[in-house]
Each structure stands twice: as structure tokens, then as C-alpha cells.
Image (tube, rainbow over all chains, first blue to last red; front, top):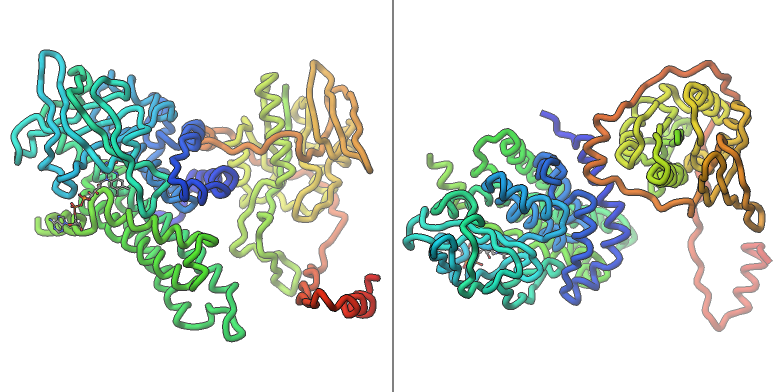
Length: 379
Length: 245
Ligand SMILES: Cc1cc2nc3c(=O)[nH]c(=O)nc-3n(C[C@H](O)[C@H](O)[C@H](O)COP(=O)(O)OP(=O)(O)OC[C@H]3O[C@@H](n4cnc5c(N)ncnc54)[C@H](O)[C@@H]3O)c2cc1C
């Protein structure tokens, strides 16, 4: 096993830093303030090949593995966690679902547009009354000839407004039947499909989160992914990969907060010495450094299994759970190490503090990860 | 068009500079290495010229195996193949000889490099390569356009600019704004792995200089704050302590 970044990963990290320092860092506070979703950045990411990292080159993607994908998401997250979240959701949820479960014609139709960011993708599972308990969803699709008619509301959807195409999981069978749900692709502009309210959030403000509303929205049978009744099971598999995404997102935030705090602890002097000299501070950093390595190892372990087509449910839940808790606690400790300055927008840790909290909530809360892990270890 | 781009492998501009071994060696510990920023401009312009005129870009580095990640980056940015002369780049004359030896093997229309490296900042290699190959050399070149077998270049000179028309081939040491730095994309990174990187052994060349010791510039002194009302004290300090007026 090789524990060092490979050459591709180093080049990718460099590329993202070079791009981000010029095109993201100078503007991120303004976007955060105004809660602006910088669509033009995603278009440029499309040119760079960051929007179809796992998509084979034959479909216009970059054709890399989860190893490089982790580098992409975490390096972007370090620059701006909200943009990192959007990259993750686009790549692994919407695009990932079509890549894993679309037929050849569907892949040809949607993947090239998604991989180049000509289109931005959304993925809708959550509803106002069903988050962790997604299987209880109320949005339905009814068959009518060669068409399906969707009715209901999905909320908390990343790119629910700006997404050009969405994969939605809706009820086509009985409540309580895990095989009673089906996944469909809905394109923006389809009559009866519209965006609802955009959420005003604590953090991740550069990532758009909005409602998607379906009112007698008719879509052709050819937009169904896989078979009728497979939607929920597909969604759980998509989330197995998605959790690696959120683990990577968390790694980026954790590393960003750690690096900022480590640098500051050597620059800031109190009592005539750098605050790093106080064990109260250096021990915090020692803990962070150790936990960061743990989080990385768990995440790369999950990636390794995923790359080799092995079951990854337990390991990706562990990686997501651990890395996201690290992101939140590191951001908290980083603000502490910065003291009053950490409480202002002049330093990046204030933003990490707000942004990090999403990581223990989105794509399955920490409690749900523990539920998944405990079910797996009981086997 | 056949372009040779020579790149250096140098510490990132923000690196903390320290020395070891009784100040005779640069401490590489924790230092990130990059393509020399001026070389990066040369490479970027080569990529643009190739886009306009077609052709092939070869990157060349004189360095030991550790420079290969830097060379791969140049391949990811858009060079077609690479040559590494397997030797420590001891001094400008040695490096220029290696470059000239490689250049003689191919028929290059242009030999581009940075105006200087950013480690030792010698700024001599392009001139020496030109001399060794019997070609004109220009530096620092801020603009370079090619039409047929001639090029129009703009070069910075003391207090102004000089516009020249030169016939190919020639050697140019480049600087901004000759091109915009290029960021590799994921496809470039993927294909960099499969592009040829040939390692060749150095030709004999005399090393004329020997490094005896490094010395850091003196640390910046503390700042003295003087009250705005106290102009006399300021003048006194500037005159008697700083001795600048
Ligand atoms: C910024 C953002 C972006 C998002 N993007 C998307 C997206 O693109 N697509 C999408 O489909 N969804 C998205 N979501 C939704 C997200 O996946 C849900 O918020 C998440 O799954 C939690 O659901 P909930 O908010 O309804 O919380 P609830 O399920 O109501 O949970 C509330 C609390 O109860 C706990 N809880 C619930 N059940 C149990 C249990 N059995 N045992 C123990 N504790 C339990 C939870 O852990 C949590 O602490 C996004 C959310 C956010 C905030």
C-alpha cells in the first residue's frame, strides 16, 4: 500500500491551488456574504475536467479513480467548502447516479453535458418531511401510457434552482416498500418542473440549496434509470460513493483549518513568545495532526475498496462520520487558537467554522452513519 | 513548428530558505519545487504557438531524477515529450552545454527558456546556448509572434523596448507578458503519464564555478515608530542612525 499522494494527485492539487488563488480566493467572502452561487466557476471547472472526474473519457469525462476524486474535492473545499460541496454533489450524486445506473443511450445523452459542466446536475432524494427517513417519501410518479407523471416537492436540493438536469427518486409503489421507489431524470424546462425557495443558510453559502417542485410533470419512460422499483436501492448505492465525497469535503476543511491554525500559532505572540509554545495550544494541534491522518487513511481505504469494486458501505460511512466530525471540531479549535481574530471574517477559520457543520448533516447525519455502521458490524 | 522549451526545477517563491551542512547545501526539507516562473511563460507561449501553427513541443531539463514531477507538469500543460539530462545543473556554462548538445540532435525552430532561473538568477544560459549553437539569442523577450520563417519579437531594454524581426531559428529568454501562465487540465494530467520522458546522460563539459558557502541576507531589523509630531527625531534618526540622508 502506498501512503503518499501519487503524481496525478500532486498535479491536480497544484492545478486547483493555482486556479483557486486567482479565481476563487479573492471573491469568496463576497459570494459568501451575498450567498451567491458562482456558476461561472463551475463552467471553468468543466473546462479543467473537474466536473466529470470519474466519468470515462468516452463520455467526455476525465476518467480518473476515487483517489484523484478525493484530491479534487478536498483541494476545492480547502479553498471554499461551498464550492467543494457543489463539485461533490454534481460529480458523485447526479452524474454518479447516471454513470452507475443509466443505460448506454442515457449515458450518451447526459454524461457529456454534465462532465463538461455545460449542464449542472442536481439530485433529489430529501423531502420536507423525510430526511434521514428518505424511504418514506411522498413525491409520487404515476404511469400514464408511455409517460410518468410526477407530483410532489423535494427540498434541500443542491442546485435545485440552477441545475439544468436532476435525478429524482420518487414513489412508484407502496409506502414502506423499499422497492416501491424509482429514479428518473428530469430536464429543466420540462413543464410542471420548477424551482421553489432557495434556502438562506448558516454556511456553505456559495453552494445553492433549493426546493424542486413537481406539478403534473410529465416525463417519458426513457428517462427512467434502471428498472421500476429500483430507485431507493440505487440511491443507497449512490450514497455509498457520495459519503466518500463528503469525507473528502471534510478532509479539505479539516486540513484547511489545521494549516491556518498551525501557521497562526507560530506568528501570534503573547507573553513574549509564539502561542505555539504553550502546550495548551500545541497539544490541540498535535491532536488535530493525528486525527487528520486517521481521517485520511479511512477515506483512502474507502476509495481503495470502491476503486476495486468491493463493498464499501461500512467503510465509507466510517470515513464520512469520522472526517466530518474532525472538520467540525478542527474548525472549532482553529477559531479558539485564533482567539478574537478567529471570530472575524478577516481570517478563513470563521468561514470554516460555519461551513463545516454541513458535513455532519448532509448525505446522512452522523447518527445515521452510526446506524449504518452498527448494522454492518452486527452481520 | 518544432519548439524546444528549457525549464528549471526551482523552489517555490514562498519557500522558507535555509541551509545545511555548514551552509554549503540548500535545505530541501519541506520545500515545494515548481517550474521556474519565467520558464512557465516560455512554455505557455510555446503552447500558444503550437495551437496557431501546429508542430511539436519538447521540454528539456538538466537535473537529477527528483525533477521528474516538475517535468511531468510541463507535459500536462501541453508539451509533447520531454528530455531530462541526468546531471546536477552545476553552473550556467555546464547547463548551456547540455542544452546545446540536445538542441543539436533535433531541428528546432525555436529554443525558448525563462530570462533567468529564480534560484541562482544567473540569466546567462540563453546567451551561452546561442553562442554554442551559433544562433542569435534575445532576452528578455516580452512578445513573440511567428510568421513563416521569421518572428517579430519585443525585448525589454534599458529604459524602453526594442522591436525586432528575426529569422528562425533563435534562442529567446522569456518574461511576462509574453503569454498567460497555463494551468493543466485533467486530460493533460492524464495524458502526461503516457508521454515520453527520455533520460539522457550528460556530455562532458567543464564546470567553471564552485560553490563554497551560502549566506542569508541579514534579518530585517525591527520597525521604529516615531510620533507624527516628532519630525526632528525622525530626521535625526535617518541621518545619524540609518545614515540614509
Ligand atoms: C446544504 C445542504 C445540501 C443538501 N443537499 C441535498 C441534495 O442535493 N439532495 C438531497 O436529496 N438532499 C440534500 N440535503 C438533505 C440532507 O441529506 C438531509 O438534510 C439529511 O439527510 C438529514 O435529514 P433532515 O434534515 O430531514 O434531518 P432529520 O432526518 O429530520 O434528522 C433530525 C435529527 O434526528 C436525527 N435522527 C433521525 N433519525 C434518526 C435515527 N433513526 N436515529 C438517531 N437519530 C436520528 C438526525 O441525525 C438529526 O440529528 C442537503 C442538506 C443540506 C443542509
